[in-house]
Structure formats: C-alpha cells, structure tokens
Length: 176
Image (cartoon, rainbow, N blue to C red; front, side):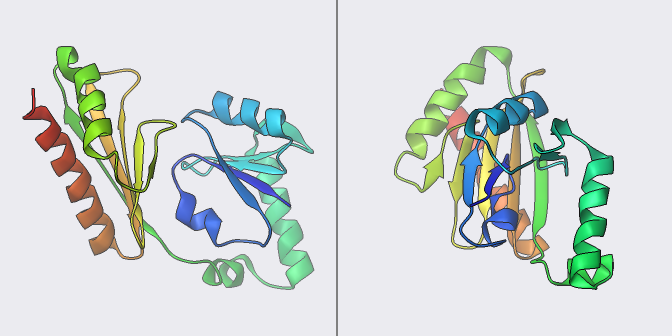
C-alpha cells in the first residue's frame, strides 16, 4: 500500500486510492522528507502542494510532480482538467492571532486540556476532526502568533470551523 504523509490536508488524501495509509508528521519539508525515508513511503505531501516522490529523490520536486501528472494523463487518456474534475473539492481557511510571548506555552497547555475529549491528534499543534472537516491550531515557530487552519466541503463550513478554532484560542486566553 501507498503511505501518504500529509501535513494539514488530511481530507484530500484520505479519500484517494485504496489500501493506503496516512502517516502524520510536523510542518516542514525537512520533517516530511525525513519521515518519508524512515517509513519507506511511496509518496509524501505538504499542504502547500509540495510532493515528495522517493523513487526519484526524497525532496520536493515540481518537475517530477509534473512528469508524474503527464504519466497519469497518458495512462488514463484524460486531460488534466478532466482528472481534476474527478477529485473531491475542499475549501481551506487560514487565520492568525497575535499572542503575548509570555502566554505562548500556557495557551498550548490550556488548549490541550480544553480539547482532551475531542477527536484530535497533537503531532504539530492540535488538529481537531469534525464530521466533514477539521481545525488545526498551532503556534508559529518564528513569531508570537497562533495560526488556525481549517478545511471543509464548502467555504462557508471551512470559515465556520476556523471561527470555532479562533474562539477556542480566545477562550483559552481568558483562563490565564
């Protein structure tokens, strides 16, 4: 089976192929590349569209991704637009909130406690799964902000999920 390594776009890949496994890693191409090698994955991917194809090389490679797409087009006898129409459509929302530096750690601890009974993973921040989408809340690694990402089957639902994530952050801040 193919192992997909996906950072923050689970829904897109979870419905593709058959018999595959999704293995999660933290945000960052270096982390994805290392994990692809550790588990011998057939493919790795990032939310930003970066694709890792280990039989060629273990880093992002747009030219190889293009070549793989052309190969699929030839094998399927379809144009790229026809293939894209077969894929599920998901919408994403991204927001951020400035956080006082002295509250960054406290905020994550509080958010972890507030979401402990929810369907979530905590590999890189807190990713909360809902019936038709998800919310990811994580601190920036470079500045005093928290980011909230969401994905849903419509833009309206994705926006509502991100609103929920931002409200979680605000509520956690009031507990200090």
